[in-house]
Length: 291
Length: 286
Image (cartoon, rainbow over all chains, first blue to last red):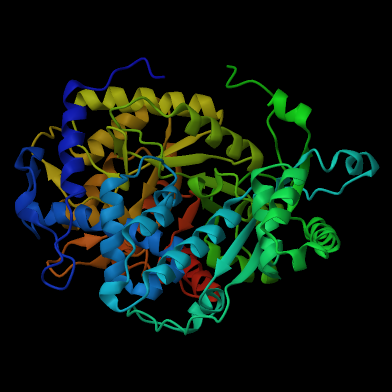
């Protein structure tokens, strides 16, 4: 904390200047342009040798928005390309107006964007199924979350862990996410680099059945592992609770025909998940109480 | 003074953290890693954007650890908010100190600007009116930052696109007074001096006249773009212009040697092009 106080006028000046640079850009002309008539003249900007005062302020106004659009495009590349840059920037502007950046970490401006997309459900105005856009946003968000995860060590169970496995909770690795797709969006995301342009991409045909994957961060980049539908369900249940509860819940969801093979399959799924590094530890009921 | 509790974490390093005064360095960006780790080009040092490494994400940190094995690394921030009206962000400063310790940075720098106010982060380097009472405020905050870091702290001059009727000092008077009163250092961005001189109609030589070169920690060079109305914008997406090289030569003659760094942040060319740009800088000051 500094001892010195800011001059009285500074907070007022920064509020006025802040309102200038966050003034929404106009889209009616088909390009994003600054609404210089909305700027507060009390900010005290002077004209320069090359441009009038409002044009000089507009440099900051445009930079503010374009910089944030760029961050949101980078954080949600599949969503951006699916609906095209123009529509995406409009969506981003609405999101940013309701969620003004607060952190010095510019990457955090994208926090919660997938939830916003799920509420707004864009797409139909472009002839795109909005479920596909929401799915794309969650796939992008998962990649972003996994990339930003800290370095972790995978859980390697010992003999004592086996004894308490059923009553404990497996702690998921922050560098792992479970993904679902009803369109082949993961493949589309992998090939984005090969396509250029800002127009919406053609949405591939819907899959006959949804597909499920585990996304993991490895030293060489993102890796995805296909999961069976029930396997994905189990892991999502494990993200929320104890192994015993997850298995019981999964069993309840299964048909009679599935139940017979469930123990063997669940054991195989769990063994593979440990081997691949889905988990970073085991939280016993006692530890949970302590937390 | 005690900066904070605990023992500072520091990676074991191969090269010492010191820079020769004539060092030539490059702003490290994500696109550089592949070339860097394959060729280890002859760079005197690297500069990172502090905020890109303050978070917990493992991939940036691992790449930085590898780079630090071969090069000294200095920190350059954009989020300190030195001229913001709100108190300095203590959590941010703590994280910055930890990162500086980790890479054993010879120095840390940020800008003479504000970037957040009233709880909103604008993610830009914003100017203020230049008045004497703001000198005291900025100098005290810069001094606090330098003490917390326990290493030299450099303050960078802005590229600016607007001036304010409330100003009673020139930018260079304001800048030099903040540096002097704070006991911190100049990070003199010669491209920014040139860009602002064209946007505001002053002689860039007057700016250099005001700089105490014995307090210059580092000089930045970069390229700029022009708006349709002729306003120059500090975009870091072009080679350094001839006029900026000339100004740099003038600075070097007045107060060189000083470590010099090339920034290139958008439309980044392949590393050999950047190395050739650095060679141009070497020739300019020969």
